[in-house]
Image (cartoon, rainbow, N blue to C red; front, side, top):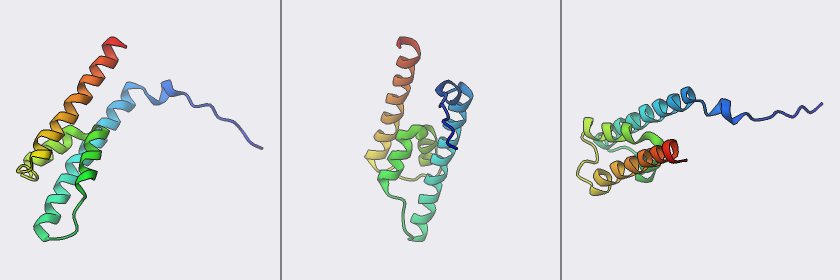
Length: 102
């Protein structure tokens, strides 16, 4: 009737899966920066700023930073110009620490 399945975290957190996730979240971050810029030009409903920061915090910092400068979107807002790189640098430091000092 009920079959218990065991989660194998080693399978889930393989380097290949992590890299695929990072690629996907950064492409998504780049896309939402484009979409928000497009909506801003049209005067349409916008993507909340906290959502942009949330995607950055989930690992999409490279994509959101690239989108910010490619589309010249949010580049006048100090929260974004400093915030996106700050979050991304903290994540990189965390990954380096986890890989080498864990």
